[in-house]
Length: 122
Image (tube, rainbow, N blue to C red; front, side, top):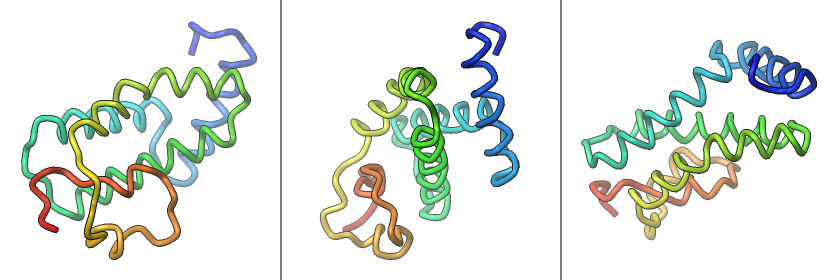
């Protein structure tokens, strides 16, 4: 956090504390987890549906922080996740049948809920 201007650093600390109160996970830990999830999906390794749902919930948590962040901090977070979002997008396909999202999506609107790894059955 020392790399950022004071105002952004304070906001990142606030967002991290908010996240920790909900998920028991810091902002750096969440961003690292999303990075690892994107790489795991891109590796085409088999992924259980429960594990995949956890990945999508993690991305929901990031989106929640993006919506709460100021413009500057939000842009910074977008830059930090852009590569991982792209990796995840290109390593998945549209869930044509909606079979996965029907069970776990609820009212979530993120684009990631419309994607499944190639090995998931329709």
